[in-house]
Amino acid sequence: MTTLTAVPDPSTGSIQLSITQTNSVTKITRSDANGIAEVRVAAGQLPSASTGTTIVTDYEAASGVCNYTVTTTNTSDIATASTTLTLAKPWLMVPIAPNYSSTVETVTNYGAGRSSNSTVHQIIGRADPLVVLGKLGTRTGTLEIWTDSIASANALARVFDRGEIVMLKQGDNAGMDMYFTADDLDISPYSVAGAGLTRYKFTVRYREVVRPYGNLAGALGWTFDALASRYSTFDQILADYATFDALTLGGI
Image (cartoon, rainbow, N blue to C red):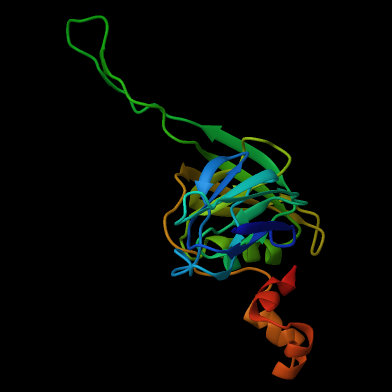
């Protein structure tokens, strides 16, 4: 019987999934406050081997209760698990490349508008127009984020440097989470208070988009770089971790 363990990691705004499979895993599905979606995995992870352990980090889980379902090649062998992710601060998460993600202190202003995709034809000699109806578009507007210095604001801009789709995740305001692309960024003072005292607003003019396609191409938190900074030899690593799976999970 395939089993699933889900462990939240607030330090990276993610949930770590550990699957011990007795059949090949074909799909992992998450249900949370933002809806139902397949969990993004690295290239080649799924379908998995028919036995062993598969470890996946879900960076797109919403704050709150998250329910997971693992589907295998055996339709009767399904594993489920639930856990709760608590976010201390909002995240600007890069789903494809999480290593470019960052927390923010607070979102100080938020605006969202939706334009109609209908087309209106005003006919000469006719009082009422002919309308080709269209759906409302996705949200567009601005996010204003508090930063304590120019250096902090410049560091936050790194989230957008790759030109990837970004996900806003937060725990205080249900319904604000979204995938979006930045039209432009602006950094300006809230009020000038002198060197070292001025606080800056980081403004993102955004356009909401659908969840991006593609495999996970990075990691956040417990990485080989973090491992190298903690241990100087392989013998030290082996003293703490008996298997590679234990090492993978060791950052939580």
